[in-house]
Image (cartoon, rainbow, N blue to C red; front, top):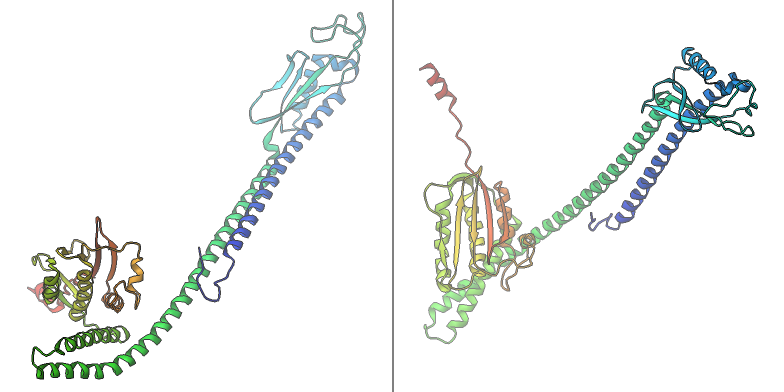
Length: 437
């Protein structure tokens, strides 16, 4: 997104976007770090509870009882049935070979498991309290037996920490999204504001240009008409073979060209009121083409006109529409090479009528079509650059659109879209009469 000229032309858009991106990334990293820290805190909380149970059980078994599976089974049953630890779901005493000597409860994926070593006393010598050692005891009496206590507790007991972790992650994600959306809409609003400022400045410029053009046109029109008229009178009084006839013809031709320029300036600066009526496009197109027949004959250009049936009824201003078609067809004739064809088609299949004027000239090439609709922009050496600008002004006032496009394999297409005729409004009195009948 780029900003145009004006007060905010030098707004650091890239710096702003970069700063928003850095803040969003920092917030995302902080959110992920906070989430993982809280998950670790949850695991520590669960681990602490397993150590609590492990310490409780080993404290209740003293001395050699820690080697007795029956003593462990009894103390496990009492602990599980006491109800003091509802989150305790599984207990198991594991021998050094990984075999369960005694269990209480059922293993499940929903449980958090922790396994701690049970500190046991040195086994008494043979003939002591337990007699011969069990298969899980070490055969030497110098080392204590290594038992493991496996404890499973319900993960939901630490659910408040998990919920808080996800809550913080969700809030951080929403904050990042809100910051990104606000940044986008800020730039979009600023961009629209700057475009509005540029458009207003352009409108003021065009208004001043229009006033100047209208003044100049009025000042030029009268002496120009006198120059043209006096030259034509002088031509009539001189013999046809006089050596100044050709020079005077050039004067008349250039005066006519200046008259067209003055007319375009007045049409652009002070548009006349639009008289929108229902009319048939086809005969208007044919009439304008016939008016330009002499120019097409010089270059041997053929007009391919649309079929007169069915009629193409639109709501438009007849004079304005003729001026638009005249400007567009003149451009097509000047752009077309000799021995070529200009095709005019009318399509009324939709809600509007589409008029297409296709030539076989050089086309738009790399030219931006929208630039050609700007005042005083032209590709012709002797053009005024007002024909298309005036045409767009008239068409838009009629509620339509006009644009230029390249044509394959060569040439250009001018597309003129005009609103179709309005549906007839029923007569209320006739409707009442019909209802009574």
